[in-house]
Image (cartoon, rainbow, N blue to C red; front, side, top):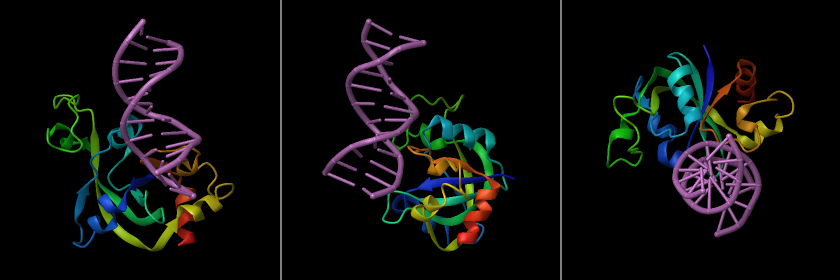
Amino acid sequence: MRYWLMKTEPETFGVEHLGAAPRRTSAWDGVRNFQARNMLRDEMQRGDEAFLYHSSCDVPGIAAIMRIAKSGYPDATAFERKHHHYDADSDPANPRWFMVDVQLQRRLKRVITLEELRAHAARELKGMVLLRPGNRLSITPVEAAHWKFILTLE
DNA sequence: GCCAACGTTGGC
DNA sequence: GCCAACGTTGGC
């Protein structure tokens, strides 16, 4: 089992959108970056766990834990002409973009902020992809040791 | 294959 | 709103 961190803007798709109904799953659509696509398509497996990270907001940070409920499958929004994420170059016979289904496991008791994570960047969280300068990837792998440490901050 | 121009991301 | 850091595009 692997661990991931998935970024989202809370106003667009935050923890509230995942929530409420138990066992509800949501498709993580709209990823239009090849590196992230490769992870969605090739690496993320059902049962993996992922931090839900809120970006572009007042307090960026980790807000919840999700479980991958379904491994990668074609992102159908790429084929919908009217859709915000439409991509004319994605051929339904050979889809370019992929998504996974996620399921909320639990909200964290509090948001673990980017600032806090950065405070440990030189030691406990050394090498964490999220903290690398210039990183913009919306999906990043998380090492098991980092995952555990972050939960101790909660 | 190079690289400049451009668009996007995302913290601040 | 600013801007650095990337990714993508497209001319050559």
